[in-house]
Image (cartoon, rainbow, N blue to C red):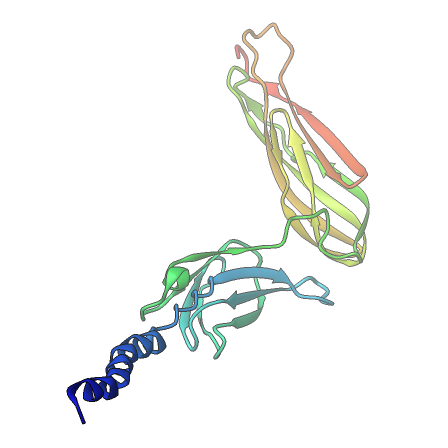
Length: 232
């Protein structure tokens, strides 16, 4: 066999040897890592509960992770194999979820604020307020009318059903809209403090402090005329 024939036989082997590293490198290229899920916390209204109850849910955390919950209640939950967890019947309010220990990805190891249901007029459809009453304080002592005076009024709701209702207080230059847990036939609407105006001279009329309570289409209001100390 001559030298040219030997080179011809070696040529295919050399081409194969050169090509193999490129093919192997392509096969061994690592796949792009999957994006870490976004950790989320939410306070949700539990269905078919009366009075209304709320559940706190976690999603997108690491599997079997301890997560500390702070807010109106404080406790620790452990996520399942999918990184989710649920705690039933918690108080409504603002909560924060914070993973404990471990190395998470993205926001899996950061504090997460818990979203909550939008505030509505009522949280159940079973409550119907038919009347509201506002009462002035039982006593009306003499005060210095040259400075603002705080006067506290109380309210009462009358109606049917059981559940939370949002009430709207208003007085002079102040307003408030708390949630009240109503139980038929009547429930206290709590209290509301209104500040009186002032008068610059004793010859002017005595200042007045007023309060109005509204739920839906029913409303009531009252006022107190201050008893001014001599010279104020």
